[in-house]
Picture 1 (cartoon, rainbow, N blue to C red):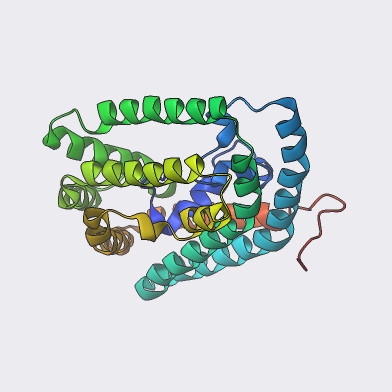
Picture 2 (spheres, rainbow, N blue to C red):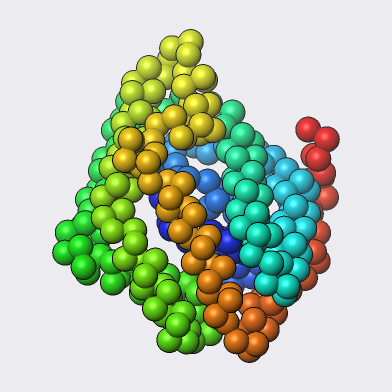
Length: 286
C-alpha cells in the first residue's frame, strides 16, 4: 500500500520509521510496494533461494542508494533553510527517481519468486489481499465523506507533527483545505489499487508463459500503465496540491518550527552519513 505520506519528506519518514536509522536500509523489503512474506507462506526452498537475493539487494541499497539519500537530505535541508519553494518541489522528482531505481533493482528477483509460486500459494496471496482490501474499504470508504476528509486531515497533521511540532491556526486550516480538496479520493485510490491487483492476478495465472517477465516488469516498473482513468486524471492534480500545501506550510512556519524541521533533517543526514556497509556489500559497479 502506497500511503499518502508527506511527499517532500516521505523518504526521510521511511528512513526514520524504525527506532534506529540503520534498520531502515537493512530492511529493504519494507520499501517495496508489498512484501510477499506477509501474504504467502514460503517453503524452505523458496526461503533459501530468497535469502542471498535479498542480501544482494540490501548490499546494492547500502552502497549505491544510501549516498544518494544523504545528498537528497542535504539538498532538502538547504531548500528548507532558504525557503526555496521551487527547490522543495523539485525534490519530488528526485524521490520518484529513487523509487523507480528500487523497482528496477528488485524486479528480477520478484519475478523469479512469483514464477515459482504453487497454485495454493497464489490462492493464499489473493485471499490475503482480499482480506486487506476489505479492511481498507471499511476504514477509508464506509465512513461518510465528511468523516473521510476529517480523518485525512488528522492523519496528515500527525505526520507533520514530528517535523513542525504543534501546527498553528493557519497551518491547521491549510491542512484542512488540502484534505477537503481531495474530496472522494479514497474511492479513486482503492479502485486503482484493485485494478493493479487484477493485472497481477492475470499475470500470475500465466506465470509459466514466455511473456511473464515482460508482464511483471511492466507491473513493477510502469505502474502508470495500469492506472484507472479516474486515478490517472487525479494523480498530477493531487501531487501538485500536495506540493503547494508543503510550500504554504513552510511559508506559514515560525522560526522555531523551521529550526525543528531543519534539525530533524540534519539528524537524519548525519545518521545516514555515518552508516557503514558490511564487508562484501560493495556492488556499486553492477
